[in-house]
Image: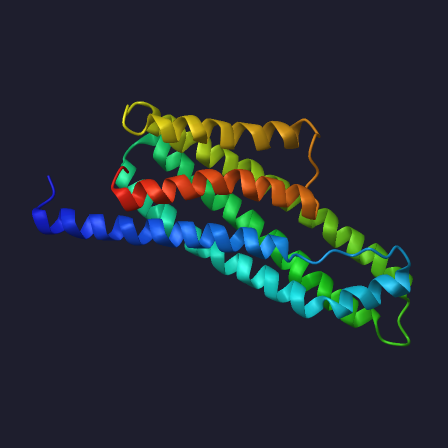
Length: 223
């Protein structure tokens, strides 16, 4: 059993993690709302457009990467409160770590690799048409990683919801978690949603609802 001092420290840590989780979630949605998109289909114009938006793209994706790191911290506390010794909690954290790694890789490609390609092919002696080929290959990797990340995040929420289900006090969070986990996964695997900017925003918002509720539960000491 924890001592009074240990219990107080754990409660403070939970509140801090809850605040971080809610703040990071809200900021992630705001960042996604500012995610740049490319409208031009002409090679030369596409290179120029990516170049113009490169700074914004790097900023948005850099912020998203930092916020994902904060999510890992917050959910490590969440798992500690649920009990890391439970298999469902451990599996959830493993899935969340896999998802975070995949999403950070996807953000690196989209925000930094594609911007670097645009800078390279913007030179006068470069063949702009090759940028489209290189960028298409890079974005194929981005989409594959983003899909893996989204499915892994759904797996994490599902596992944690299973762990929460046994406790009547926490069951409401499990019910919301089942919906937040299964709906994006079904939409992605069924081909109803494609992880372009719009699709990723929808997935982020669906997960954000549960993240915020989990953060509130941490703050209130319900987890």
